[in-house]
Image (cartoon, rainbow, N blue to C red; front, top):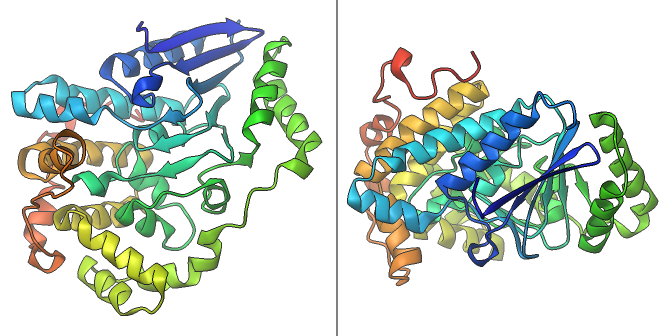
Length: 360
């Protein structure tokens, strides 16, 4: 195991805790391997009827993957960089298909890789401290960890909006978008965990029912603020239904109001290449199975650090912190369609794909 993931079985529940608070519980390969090992051990263990996953430290569930490691590994040609994503995506799939209730306590920052280990949960709980996003285009990446798949299944064109802009949303928006199941104030969530630990459960449904009963008792205190996404949904659907990234940016640039101006500015700061690639990803994902979509993401990630903007984006945001990325393409109009499509050419034959066994 690793010091950054703690595991405990108590009262029929397996508790998985990400314990790297100084890095907002960002995922390393060792943490991914520790989570995978625990889940594989517990799936057939009669003493475990459900799993609860949480982040330590009070600030974050999980802020994503360790992007500083990505930058270093890409510069050094470290083969473990590719292996990181192979094992992370396999873990994401394992969670989506887990045979026992897997319950994610999405308190605090939940971004990128944190979404990957929570969106497949049977129950996704958010709090007033939840800050949720798929911010990958900000660093020259794309919304991976199954992001294409779960963003494509949000209402209307919210998936395109969240995936392209990387906008941070709170609990009410997460519930509206179908990216969370229930809201509890953080102090009540702590009480729920204490109550779970005080009992012994014979089956997973009993764990889910206990949490539901607890939430019902506190329902008057459990109303998050109004969803901003709900109020913007018609405008989002109109603008982000554009056929191409060029169409979308033109539409948002012409739209009136502060929200449109802020969104246009946000899009113009992102990698033009990866905006095109991310839009193509989400559009393709609407008709794909989860396993096929994760295989597609691994194909895409293979190219991101070889011919994409990933290394430069991470440099500008997290290494030099100058926030002045030098993207390959200056504007969305400069990106060729052929270059975008090249990210979707698998470098592997189907039978040799590292994720060939997913869904089989």
